[in-house]
Image (cartoon, rainbow, N blue to C red; front, side):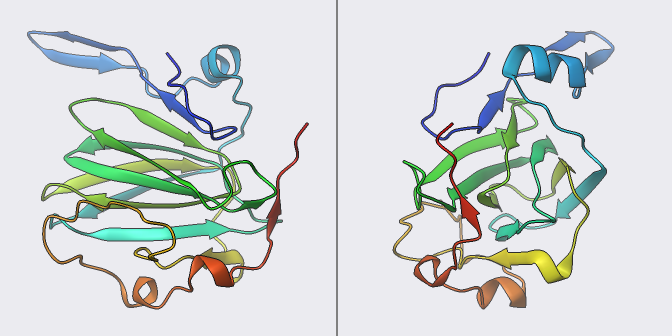
Length: 187
């Protein structure tokens, strides 16, 4: 069932998990179900898998600009994260606002993130595995980001200790300095 949120195109998905004494089975991706139940039409071209040894690892906030902009379908298979998106679509009613949700192996939720959102996450426990599909391959020349702890965004990351970041993520620009890469279409 879709969780209501004011962010156009952002969808929380609750895949069904069939469990018994052997373990479980879950259909984690079904293109037709996403189209029919959630009105998500997206051709994913690449799967990515990330592993973080420590809790408090922050990855993001990242996005790619057109023509290499990406939609993502994200989930956690081991551990837990606080997943965060920031609307970077100029003229959007939620421009500059963020949405966060805990994704974990336990709650089995997924998040569909359309183009026009910066994305990042913080691991809440050690040894967390994060998997995601993207609609366009990685393109370094189209990649951009926002400083994860920009005070203007007021994101409560709940970092259990001091955040562990890549050098690149320590140097991302502030939200106020972003050019208009995405324009929200009210239609």
